[in-house]
Length: 53
Image (cartoon, rainbow, N blue to C red; front, side, top):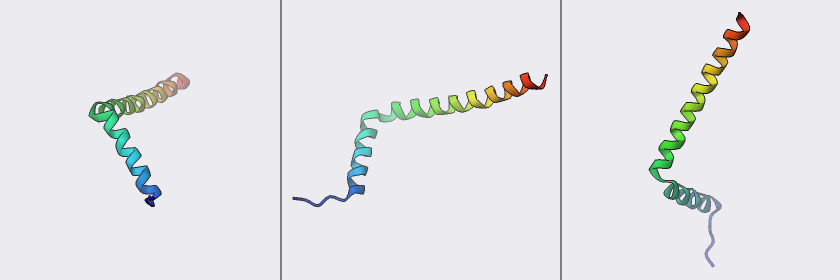
C-alpha cells in the first residue's frame, strides 16, 4: 500500500473540484461575490440615509 500525505489528498480533491467547475464557474462566483459586496455596501448606505432623516 502507498502511504499518502493528507495535504496531497486535499490538493487532489481541490484540483478535481476546479476541473469540474471550470473557468465559467470561477467567473460566476467572482461576479457573484462582487455583486454581494455592492449589495451590502449600498444597502448599509441606504439604511444610514433612512435613519438620518
